[in-house]
Amino acid sequence: MESKVLPHSADRGVPRPIQLVLVRANGPLFYSVTAASLLESIAPLYAQRLLYLVRNDTALTEWIEKEWLPRKAERARMLQEYVERTWPEFDWAAAYEHYRGCAEAEGGLGPRRATAAQELLARCVAAAQSGVIYRCLSRWADDPALRAMAGTIACDEAQAFASFRTAYDRRLRVERLSFFRAWRTARACVRTARDIHVPLVFRAITAQCGQRVPFPILRYSEFLRRMRPVIARYAAPGNPERLLFRPWNGRPRIAKVQEKRQCAPEWFRPVLKAAA
Image (cartoon, rainbow, N blue to C red; front, side, top):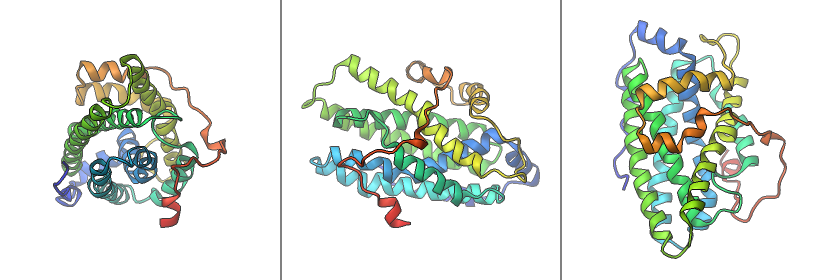
């Protein structure tokens, strides 16, 4: 279980001037870290359907509410502070409000009518994808403090993956899910991240990038093109990861989810609005 407290890696040292210049001018790095901070911040919203589907599993529900979500909140805070300190001209709060509104309209991670097993599988996929990104950041970033923070989070994601995988395997004992259906679900989760979730957060970030940002503003397709060789080199994904995440090499099919209006499902609770 995830029992350790995240170290305040971003506070351990301020990058030297040349490092700060390199970090601030690195557009793909800015988008990667800022997207991670926003995605972590929205975790309670995406966890609502998961908690609803596994509500009869007391031990899993308690782990999600008391360990996994609090740790997500802590890393979101640390990443937000890093972004605001490193790129003060960027309005993180406005980007968060923009992204939150879009995410509430879009819904969860897995299939629309997901079962508990599919939702747990979606969590495994999400943890694996995040782990690759944080592993890449831990080796690629010019700032040692950011590398240390990303390395810690990558380890946390590996632990979360193991916990969700155990819960998924346990769920399969009572819920039938064929290998073919599980594979289709996993690949659909990857494509949904590529075509919906990451474009939404990318759009929210770009909307708050004014003329004073110290890097060229990127299109989403350009960001993906530039990040693919970086991830291949620094994250060094294994064969299973390369196979699962192959859709990221394809051209994204971005959905216009911002325009959607749908009735709230039974599991939906607007906790983020209430807390705002």
